[in-house]
Length: 401
Image 1: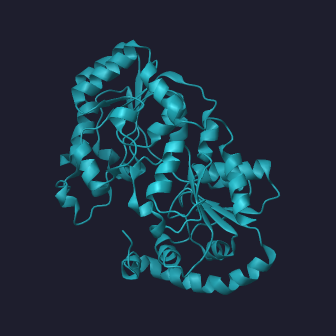
Image 2 (image 1 turned 180 degrees about the vertical axis):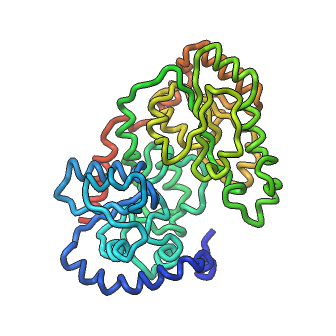
Image 3 (image 1 turned 30 degrees about the vertical axis):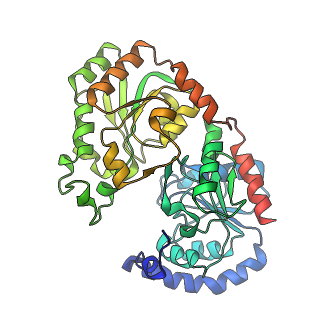
């Protein structure tokens, strides 16, 4: 649904007001910068990190096309700052210089919809058409659900990266982008999934977030009472799993370790979780890198997270534990083209007992992937190589030339 200008301006908070002044200061400076930096590509992921598709694309540019004028925006306080700084030029995220470069850039490239000096201010300016810049959305993961906040009327992106034919067709048909705006080049980080070394005894549990818990609104109470996190279905379900005696026995008897890494937006509650075994480790950003955990782990337990796509891309076994499917569909994302039962890359479990049964079966099978899921992966991932950054580069070049 298209938002009014008033609704867009409601996103602007007191803390954003200063960025309006930075924007006004940056405008004349950007006019001068453009005289000298006519082909600047500004790239970013989240403010405080460089670990997603933006980072891998920036690294590709520095290694394969060092002649390209490119700058990566990241906070100087980020634990990843020095890693990026060693590759090339950076700018402090949200600074006046970031605003100047954002307005100067021939193209702004990000894995985040909000990848800009200030998301609220830029959103109001860009979607209304006041600020007409060229933006490429590298994406944060493969889209499988209907996310109306990414429809064209709410983004005005000039290019939107997809990774599979089904995802590409879904966006072309449902998200309202003009012809040619949606491109199928693959996620840049997928280039790093071609080679990996598995720790055969390491299991990974990586549930996604719940919007009504992580960012509560007045509508949250329509899903459940969230006044006490430890009484939510999310907490009680995952806590019961992590502390179940049967899980402890499975880990002990098979000499397995398990890493529990909830979505970044749920890590504010990580201290509330206890674990029933010293074989289970709670993990969090920034100490643990998501891609490293995915590559190392032999088995994944998740729920609705698109990170399962990365795991399936590596042709490894997984399961979906979906104890709150009705609430998730009601309160977060409506189902898109992807049915977990018909299209998923692992067994869908709705109860704790089912989940433990499937985990036990996977252990007995040596974590080998059942043929039915391997066939689904083969059919789904029609781009499976290390050319994702390269295809993205050529798509951006075609856009700006």
